[in-house]
Length: 118
Image 1 (cartoon, helix red, strand yellow):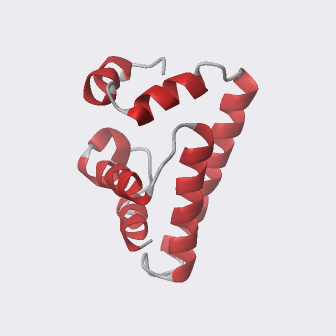
Image 2: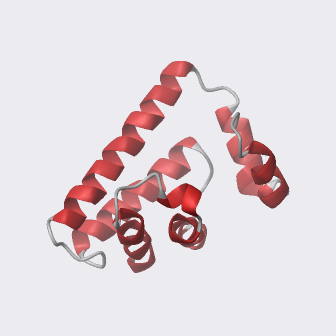
């Protein structure tokens, strides 16, 4: 993690297995890997946005399936992400403006609710 939040992340989660696993995995990623990760994340966001805009409920089967894809994405690229950890991440999406601003209006809440429904 080479960004402005790296030190905060180390301080908050540095002693966790998830943090250590993420550091180990991401340390070997190429620019192509990062491009693929971003493309996958952008696709997930676009599909969450479309689902929300369609009027589908965050607790419905389509949103729950997409939340599970989101969890699998994190598990594949960063760290093993059991449901309780995924719920905590969903909580950050709505409680921390730095996460929230990465999503169109209302989409962070929709993702949060879908994660909690999964």
